[in-house]
Amino acid sequence: QVQFVESGGGLVQPGGSLRLSCVVSRGDYLFFGMAWYRQAPGKRRELIASYTKGEGTRYKESVRGRFTISSDNAKNTVYLQMNNLKVEDSAVYYCNVPSGNVDSILVWGQGTQVTVSS
Image 1 (cartoon, one colour):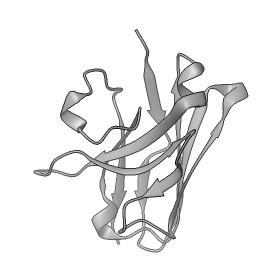
Image 2: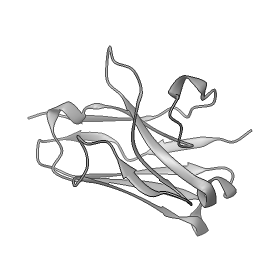
Image 3: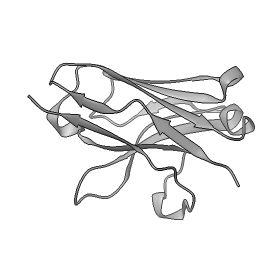
C-alpha cells in the first residue's frame, strides 16, 4: 500500500512563504502525476495543485501565481512552494494522486498543518 508523508508546515505571517514536502513510498506515482490538497476546519478537502504526465500543472484559482508544485523523482518527493501566504490558506495540507473526486481516495497521509496568522 502506498504511503504519503507530508512535512514542512508551520506558523507563518501573512505574506510569508513555506515549502511543503511529501515523500511517496512508491516512486512510480510521481511519474504519472501528483497533487496537493488542503482541508480547512469545517470545509471539504479540496484539490489545489496538481501535475500529470498528459496535462501538465494545474492550480486552483485562489493559489495560482502564489503556489508552485514540483517533484524530485530521485527522492520520491513532491513539493509545494507557497509564497505570499494569506490567512485563508490556513489548513491541513495533504499530497496524493490527482483526482476530481476527493471522496474516492481512500489512503491519506497525516497531513501537515499550515497556519497563517499575524
